[in-house]
Structures are given as C-alpha cells and as structure tokens.
Image (cartoon, rainbow, N blue to C red; front, top):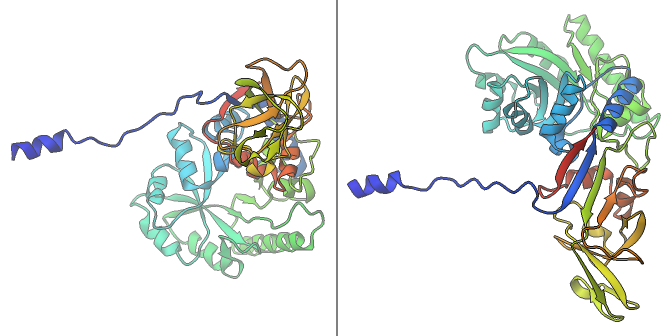
Length: 387
C-alpha cells in the first residue's frame, strides 16, 4: 500500500516546453505607425467606429501584442473568430470588450468564456436554449446575433432572425449587445449580391426597431466593405486584413500601409560547380559555377512551397533568385557580386519602400492571397514591434 502511495505521489505530470524566443533568425518587423494609419483610414472610409479583427494570431502579427497596441490606439472593441482566442486575450490581461463568434456549443471553452466577461455571438437558433441552460446562475451574458444574410456559413437563418432576437430580449440571462452579418464578395464594387445583403440587414434592423429592439452595436462591413460600400449608418465596422494593410484581389489600396517586413540572414555561403543540383530532387541545375547563400527559413515558417523556382529575395537591395525547392527549414539563393558575407540581412518582403517586393508579389507567385501567407507565420518567426 505504501509503495502505491509513493508511486502516485511521484508520478510525473504534464511537461510544458517553452520554445526559445529566437529559435531561428527570422524576424517579422511590424510597424505600429502603419497599424495606426490603417485604423484611422478605415474609420474614415467606413464612417463608423472600428472593431479590429485579431483572429488567426492577428493574421500572423501576434494576437496578444496586437491587442495591446490597438488598445493604446483607443480601440474599445476587439473581434476574434474563436472563443479560444478571446480567452487567450483575457488570460493575457486584456480587460476591454472582446467579441467571439465561433465555438462548439458542447465544448469546454464556452463555460470558461461565461466567467470571463466575453461577448459571444449567437449563430444557431436551434442551440440557443442549450446555450442559455449552460449559463451559470446569477450570470448575464452579453450576446450578439450573427445573422446569415446569404453567405451560408455559421449564422442564424435570416428567416428566423426576428424570432431569435425576441427570444433573447425576453431571456433574463442574456443581454443583447449587437447584430452582425458577413459580406460575400465586398471586394467587388457595386455587387448586386452585396447590395441585397445590405438591404436585408437594414430591413431586419428596421423590423427590430419596430419591436423596440435596438442593438447598440450593428456591423456587417469587413475591410472591403469599408472601402467599397456606404456603411456609415451602422455603428461599427469589422475590418480584419485591412488592419494589416491588406485588401482583396491582390490589388493594393494606397491608403493602407503594410506593417510587416519579413527578414532573415545568410547563415552559410558556398560555391557550387556547373552541372550540380540544388535542394531536394535537384529541381535546379547550376548553369555555371555559382556562389550560393543558405537562409534559415522555409515552408514551416511562412514561405509557401509553391513559390519554388519562382521566388526571389532582396539582399542589399539586390534581387536574388531562390534556387530549387523551398524546403521545410531553409532555402538557397543565388548570390550576386559583392554579396559575400555570412549574417547579411535578407528581406523576403517589405512595405514597398524598404523593399520593392511586398507580400502581394509573394502571393502572386503562388496564386493565393496575402492573408493565407500571413496566417501561416509559424512560432519560429520572431515578431518585433517598432514605432
């Protein structure tokens, strides 16, 4: 019996491993001034207050630090996709308003969120009674109704929206704070689909007002909704990518500034001979004797593998071609004359002024959007924040 007690007492629990801050020499330098500009620009274009969306680790920019930055810039409301992201922000010390709109009604995060004063979106009229049943006694939860105006993803069906709002109004455990929806193709100017969504959303707001239901926070516009449509009659806009300088269709809006510059350094220089191959499967064969540089960055960090044989980087403002396949942890580049120093800085993409190659050009090389690349910035990318 004593042996059993001893064994139980000495049982090893979960091990928490902390990754070093500088695991590899990759830096995403994030300009706070650009973030401030983008918030002010989107606020002016929308004619409303702004709820920055910090989902997906703030589009790769670091959710906790970005929350601190936007709070200092006067932001009252932060939006995230998942309850887990909202809980992470609360646990990091954020005390402001946070709205989350994705969760599993039977998942453990909902009960945790109830204790942390998080605004929660109601997106399914069928599970609303179960949601209310889970709320602890003497708790009143701030909720926003996420209405599906046509995108056919998570959201209360438009036909059941009035009934859902009325149900919430009459529930003592719920405090109605907002109504929201999401635009389908706001990157297209003057889209009949978007105009119909806006018509339905406004019509619903009018019907609710007739029932003396007036949610204080009303929002539907994403970044391109702010840029391309008149949404000034709503109380909030909910831009995500625009906070980070990105609009859709791989077309830059000159009013938005790109805050992130992605850098690494040369860790090795070597010479290869004509006819030798580079990287996996020798997808590149040297056409002449060459000097190459090895960079400690790959597709596990942020660079799409589909940019193999297409991507270039910039060293001392000189364009250098990436040779062969993008590996998980490293890439190989051709070094031009006078670029011959280990530890030389390499810019993968910049803001258009510090480097002519931006995230837009990288995205075009792999037929994707900048959002996808930024969201894949891994834990080995060290983020720094500059004024």
